Length: 128
Picture 1 (cartoon, rainbow, N blue to C red):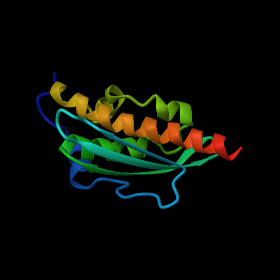
Picture 2: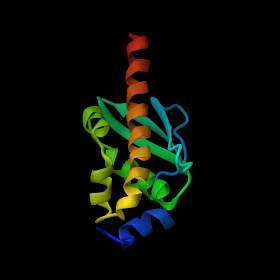
Picture 3: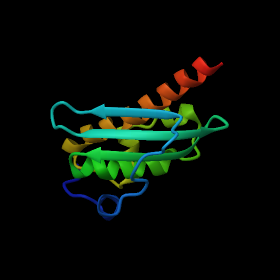
Picture 4: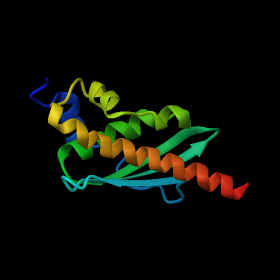
């Protein structure tokens, strides 16, 4: 069990990537964790069945912020199916480990990504 935060985690927390929102997003997902108050909002753009851009906004703990940064980096270029499968364990591995008690915060980030993808697909279907 990791008892500390890695340099990669601290880097994403101190200087997060992809902060903000995509103005004309194809999908928007927002998730919250009732027990700790984290709120994460993810916006995505899609091109050819792949995530072409993604941005996030987060309020809450350092894990929500760093997780939003890493997740939005990781999903760029992924198929929608692969991006929807993003998990807290994959994010934790991407950081080189996480304290066990903070893994649940990464679930909130992954839920926001999944909701953005689901909503993008329902928007696309309604246009057809």
